Length: 344
Ligand SMILES: [Zn+2]
Image 1 (cartoon, rainbow, N blue to C red):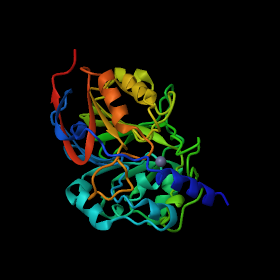
Image 2: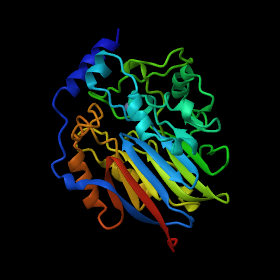
Image 3: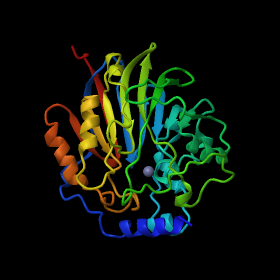
Image 4: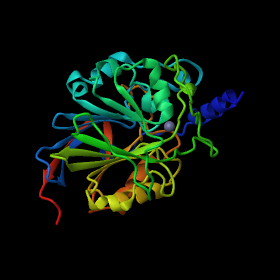
């Protein structure tokens, strides 16, 4: 009863011509070396696949965030069936990375954050842990994975309360989730909120059946001898107020080195991005979820519908000029984070 009007309104938004090309192509980063102050013995390697999908490697430990590269067209998302582009998924996610994967972190269960994980599950080691909301677990249960599916609803922290650290099986990486929120798609409405309360029997093939569930942000610590040497903060859905943030006191143990920050907000709103950047005060910020994910990766890049990506990005760069690197990464780009002497 509710699905049809939602879909049509969403269609109107999407087909409303609100997606645009980036006029200044030079602001799109294609990869580079970046220094951070860290006691780590090795670099941190970060590959951006598009939307909020990253492959983050430290030594023999890999973390995947929100695996999604298939980019089905909006007509299929709205009115048809959607399936992973298996050839593309296999090309982006190679066995070398998958074999070393320790954690897979899902921010929420909309299709553009989860859809390409089921075909990867058989290629991941048994020890890999997939973590997300109850709804994410209920969807992935249909794939009958051999790996552990952890639900974090009851162990997530907030900006004022600590959550529970989840360690990889070999303790080389850990994560803590924080309760976040999700920007509305239109008129204050977030589509397909869910949640699911029971395991699904089949993996969804309709965009509307990927219910959002509880949105989560994550702190990710890469460990050396039991000590965090790189800390990444991943916020895949732009929120509001202090939603999705972690207690500031956590920075006393380890500073944040890299922020992955969704730009899928509507209009010129950059308040949340500025809040997160000021909260983390990290030397490197990746702006994510910025490109139009209804377009094939073969097509020229356009911005995510309804968001003023270029203006917002340039506002952030000028606001934080000189104090950090703010990066608008091209899908497919790779970055090497080089450890340098610790900050005093
Ligand atoms: Zn979403």
